[in-house]
Image 1 (cartoon, rainbow, N blue to C red):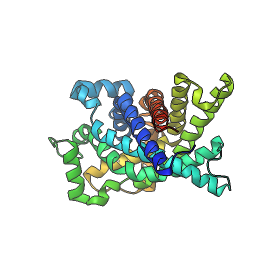
Image 2 (cartoon, rainbow, N blue to C red):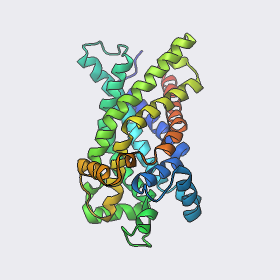
Image 3 (cartoon, rainbow, N blue to C red):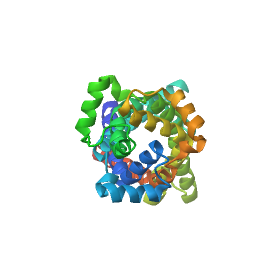
Amino acid sequence: MAPHPIIQAIIDFSAGAMGGTACVLSGQPFDTAKVKMQTFPTLYRGFIHCFTSTFRQVGLRGLYKGTSPALIASISENAVLFLSYGLCQDVIRFVSSMEKGAHLSDIQKACAGSLSSIFSSMALCPSELVKCRLQAMHEMEASGKIAIGQKSTVWTVVKTVLKTDGPLGFYQGLTSTLVREIPGYFCFFGAYEMCRTKFAQYKGTDKDSIGILPLMFSGGFGGACLWLTIYPIDCVKSRIQVYSLAGRQEGFMKTFMGVIRTESFTALYSGLTPTMIRTFPANGALFLAYELSRKFMMDTAGY
């Protein structure tokens, strides 16, 4: 028996939140290094230099800077993403003239994931702006873009945004977030579902019974495909959100072309190494937590 749509939505939302929490807790230091290298590529020779410099200058807490907004960002994004993912699968069935509850192909699920990212972007953008600013605050002060000695907490960043730009200031970088998420989550869900399908065929079982390690590998593979596809766009987004601390920034295209003109195309891939190191444990943990918590809630509810 299929669960009531409201029950299904609550389960998808809650499981997405669990997955988002697992993702952040397993990969935050690598995400901090990524943002620092994206926004200040000339300050660091590579991932190890960025990691050790941050640890030496600010301590271990510097690598976990922005964890609170990162948790808020990841929980809100993934809760809305997986809630929308279930609903968007119904939209794909409607568009494809399929019966409600009919099995979707991996490509159709990828399309549903891409569509659902539009909604998750609206939840993600404000908290990710706060996270990125906190992560790069030390470099903004060191480069002279902002005054030295500013208190860097979630609340002070929020107050600064509200004071200088108003509530809409939290959506600086929304265009680049949407440009990043829509193709990125097509690759994310497509690669995840295809990988699970291959494991199921190899093991002669269904996709829900492939085991923990294949499930985590499928999630990590999906994350790797996402980041390899959209990384330059993410770099532009990070710059817009961080540099806007020193004043209003140009839009997506002007920032993108400015980086290529002044720093070369390779600057858009600064920080890729910690991102790829992070993606397998973080996204593996995300899908493991999502699938297991979703299955537990479905079983508890008697479906």
